[in-house]
Image (cartoon, rainbow, N blue to C red; front, side, top):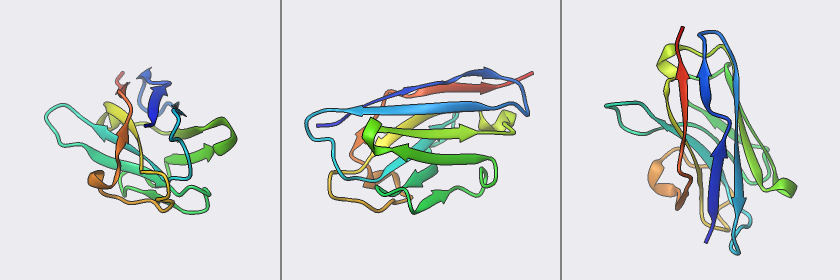
Length: 126
């Protein structure tokens, strides 16, 4: 079992920046890809970014390309999402997700991820 805990959300003005972290723990933590998803009020959850276990391969949704950066530090069991030039439409609850151990490549579908954090709120407003 893997436990994921996100942190770093908050309120930021348009054009500002935030950095999210997702710390993993549990006896089954291992070699797996991770993803960041978000869900805005009244909308379905959508993928934002994903990263392979090695960190060599990443994926970004078109809406965040050039503004968000996903990275990971396997020694710290932590994955990060740096968000720049934030827009009001980025407002959502952001979730960290992990694939099962052994699934080292990222996937852009929600069903590919087996473990989820509790989410952290990001609000972009003036």
